Length: 227
Image (cartoon, rainbow, N blue to C red; front, side, top):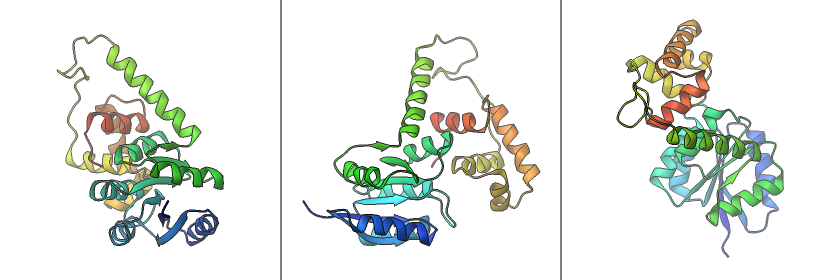
């Protein structure tokens, strides 16, 4: 079997170096490149054609979720595994919807990481146990929703009707899907943190959600945002 070519993507040099050291001693795996952010990851994936990309989430210039989507659309033969410290529901579902074949947390063992790399190449999906429980719970919730009787106040697909978002609210929602905090969204859109908080509250209300995580999951399920 030929070597599995891997591209490492993380904005922290020490993390990339640590991963490279771990994989250096894994038979059949070859680290062919390293990227510091999502933009560089997309460029290097086009140039190097790796089999697997280990993708961090929160990075400058371009985050891991939009980078994952670009790679999966342009190069479906390349498998993306998200490797992050974050297991928030909205990030998990956004990463999987973007096309990631795996979602691991950075406290995963070296053996689990190596097994995940080999597994996705063989067509398997690799999820951290914590993440897997979240995904299973969401599928169960959706299944229960689909089986529930439809009543008044629902649209023709059975979803409750919602008030349309404004263009600015849509911008904020897209950044929520990327997992950005209110402060980070404010910096990106040149808004105060308080103003962003108001937009988030409005989005939650319009999507009839319980909190920002529920709002993101609802938006993803309904296709209101394009990752």
